[in-house]
Image 1 (cartoon, rainbow, N blue to C red):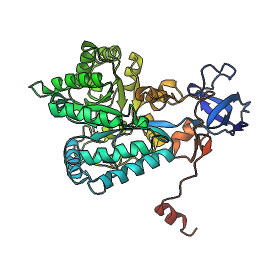
Image 2: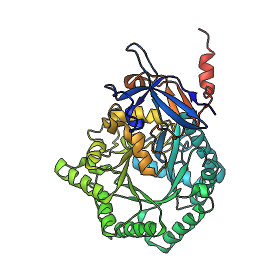
Image 3: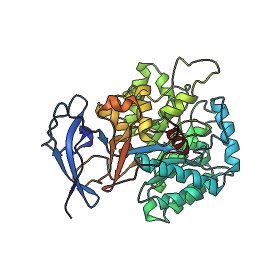
Length: 436
């Protein structure tokens, strides 16, 4: 089959084959003008494009990732709002929602999320799943079904979310073996189930959380599955959770990947304490998922006050220490955060000013692309090279400022075929029908 060329475009140099020595040096925005060719769903060639100074080529990215979502509760805000915007309010509303879940509800919400993410340009997703209580079984039934149904389009990893001390009980071990046994029902879902838990300040004086984390790490290591923790999701505690995780991973010689989602409280430490903690996390091989939307919405929320301190994982300091850091969207239209839509470009546009990331710098873009791929253990790192999937986001923006300035149109290429543009929503149709 002959190769099909794409229109000339500009791609970040960090998303192009590092071995392609024939390409020109990237410009000040880290972009290179190229022409790509593909055949049978794979890229076959990367050619330099002799861009003229006045040419306005479209910006392109490889499909992005969602390393931390909550599909079981997504789109539940309308029935279970949390208008206080506090952690306590979110917990209460989430508990009410959890008690009324059905397989059909979770399936419909998660199917909507996966379909939207696919059309927006996501290529993989990791979702945490409430795994204790009346809504746990129905959530897993729905999401395991969707994991198999979407395996060829949008791989879905699922993380069992419980209080971390639960893993030190016989019921916790039984849950882990049950979930990992289910994973084996489909080769497409292999590696798609992880263990997780909630750990952070205030730590109970009985030490049960520490023993729970020790049990979780041993259990996951023995079963050969990864760990993804909700850890230090507050302004308090000074990173005690990630410090404990780093110490135990080294002490127990844990060989499976361990991810520390949130890791907010360490950002409140002075530099003299923050940097050694980041070094310890790197030594232990811990990865981090920063979650700007939910953290900035909930943490430090006091009625009538604008917070002076905004707890958020210290992305740049962690990167400099050698820690793999990804950025995720976390909650979408549920009691924990009323916004979001599983659109990775919206998350990128939000996160850049929130975390002082610059997309024209390699480390500013990595949390949404190659670092997320590495953290999730995906086969494709998101770099365009001959033989890589012919997947691409072609954007109605000529550069980074254009992309950050406003929402832009996009076309999504999947295995060499363009997805149809999404139909406008009923409200959009209403607005477009108004007379001039």
